[in-house]
Length: 533
Image 1 (cartoon, rainbow, N blue to C red):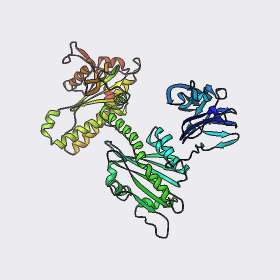
Image 2 (image 1 turned 45 degrees about the horizontal axis):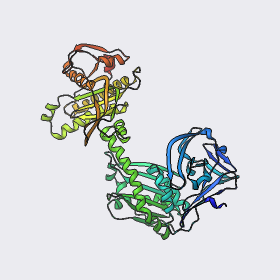
Image 3 (image 1 turned 45 degrees about the vertical axis):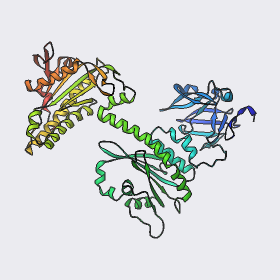
């Protein structure tokens, strides 16, 4: 080995580049991506060995350069490529030091591949199943290298569960099943769970609604005492008289389980989540295995908390802003004035006679009616690809963005949503009438126009919405529904974009609009099917 291939950073850390001496081949999506007898191997303290291939032996035609970059203080800046082969694409899984620092000149312009992203690796004719790791003596926890080199790089909680499961199994911990339960801040869901089984090597995701807390299944689950702060649960499923005090233990025993361990996974705010391990080895887990795993739980909890916080942020943005608006905010549209000009169908709907209803009905009854109205209207908008922007008292503002100004697709989806909402209201009113309750009256105004879509308000309190004269006109059009005794009214601009024949209701003056406008409604044939029969 040449001395100039040894990078001595300090006595406890080293990097060595040396010839592999074997033919190395890497496969992705059934394609051989690299095949070389001139491969170099980079050994770095506490990290897996990495193969570096000369470009002449790499299928560069299957690689696509990206803008992604990483930096190493003694190797320099790494450029990245994605691989596209067959029907698969893996992003940023190939890197190269094209202009390395002097100490790393040996791997200049060589390419390396992310091990776990590839289908298979081969030395000569033998498949290599696992990367070799640096053999420098270390007193660190057996999982420390994994935490430093692999765990932090998981892109999601699901991927982190998969990587953790592989880490445990590869270090000799006899894991049959690993399960994680993370409580969520969600209006409908109590928790999200992730389950890995060794025999399938897949991570299945499940969700639990808030209603599950009232079920017998939850009351008899080992999760319940942990969520209530009682600590962890461990049960042996071996011996002449195993303690099956939780029904799930019988199911696990039937699948070969011998030892069950459930531990609280605490987030920084004190939230209790749960991680469970099941062994199928005779005698179960050893004290050393569980002790070392327990040592890394605080770090694991922070890693999972990062993913949970992102999921919570997305959930809250979707819930309070809507999917499209929430995505824009998440992508960085967070300053006053951030936004874009769009062309869209504007939907404005309103509950009829809400003022008199608030006076005539008890608060609970009125809120129940209002929420039923919102369920029918907003649900129809969302089901047909629209974006609910705002609940304004007893009204809803929504949009259907128009991507192609020559296409009627957005207008057609808006009409389909209006008819679906009308059907739901009609069916609901039949049931309300049978119960002797007030029926729901409504109006929907549809218009098309140019809008500013973005942040308005004060610097510290913003609203992501649409503004423009077209929004005001849509509101005024909806306001004419009661005057013209129609549930659905359409502007002339909407009619121009909608290919189906509409019924003109003549010219009308809209409050606050300088010129009169022709209004339309749907023909009787379109309105007839409002009961779903």
